[in-house]
Amino acid sequence: MKYVRAFNRYGRLFLISILIILVTNGYCQEEPDFKERQDSILEELRGVKPWYEFGNEKITIIPLAILALDATYFHQDDNSTTQVGDQDARYEPGQIRALRFGVLGTINFERPWRYLVAGAYRAFDQGFNADSATDFMLYDLRLDIPTKIGAFAFGKMKEPSSMQRVASLIYLGGIERGMNLDGMLPARNTGAMYYNTVVDKRVHYALALYKSVSFPQKVYWKDASTVGIGRITVNPFVGWQEDHDLHLGISGRYSNFKGGGNLRQHPESYFASKFVETGGVEGEGIFTWNYEFAYRFKSLLITSEVTRLQLYNARLTDGNESLQDPRLKGSFVQADWLITGERRKYTSRNAVFAPAIPRRDVQQGGAGALEFTLRYSTLLTNTGGLSGGDMSKVSAFLTWYPTLLSKMQIGYGLVTLDRFGITGKTGIFQFRFAILIG
Image (tube, rainbow, N blue to C red; front, side, top):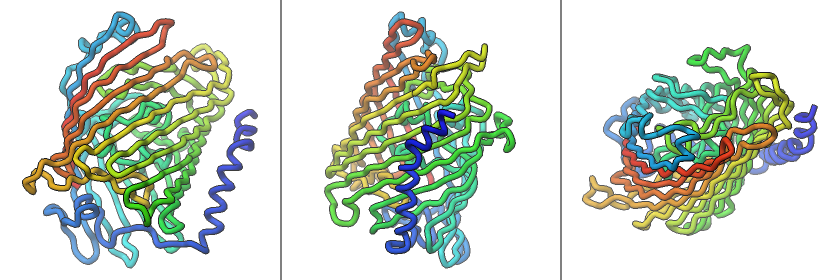
């Protein structure tokens, strides 16, 4: 089969690189970067114990809550209205983007176990098999167990397939993640993951095996797709350069695509129609590559991720029409500049950049932190017999962080959509207020 040949062609190189890390692990093994008794953002990044954290020598308990409020306004040309309908007429401008709540903390063994349980109202899970928002969803049910040879995680958790995906959305410069990531990489899955950081915390890798069960959509174990993921990253500047970070990463994701799916993606605006929609597709498998790049110089952070998705022996669900092994692709490049001079710290444990920490927040009598973000992103699905649309967006945002645990954003983006034989333009004005406890 073609997808087997493709795996033999590309997958072996990726697996060999993972194997080299595992084999040499005995010579450079390090303890996983776990805090002794907590997982609070405040305590981890500012050294301040939050008032809502409690526990004893055996367990630490930290309540978690996230509230995000959005206001969105659209300006469309005639072609855009023909393609996706009148967006202002379909959606109220002000909405609750997310209301998430749960609990996290540690079970204090010699090597503390970490746990996370969280649910969400208006939860949004993306990826090729995504459908729509649900009123309530169990977001996370995760237990991390550190050992001498690395850490193991079990339950429902984020997939280790992308830097922006692994990072929390509330700490990103843009209001939503890049459309290529939301469109082609699911946010969470259920299964097990092994991960570790070696070579003086400069190399991070993760291996995961999942089943794409979904109780809201009634996709149970026997009918769920099997998913395998590997990710490896390197940052050679960790530990010896304060002004610079250079992050390079690659991940490979295979799914047997059981039950098929439909790629549907909004234009990086949660309260918008799905501008891109492939329709129902079935196939014998999906292989997805994601390439990561980030460079930080002092207060400036430039990131980019490129995603390539290959469908094998694919066909349309309606009519059973065969496709020409579609190769979907997308990318984004983004620049974040902390105008007030703060610097994002690199977190080696999961190979992402930490939140912006205001030098003096409003609670300390300061003005907080101010960040400017510029992004260009694409998602291309008019390929191999599919005609879901080719979409691109250029956007700019200004984000104010009054404190480490809150932010206000305002931004504008211009979306270009090639679909139904016409090209439409949509301007989107966005505002978000978000606050976190946890």
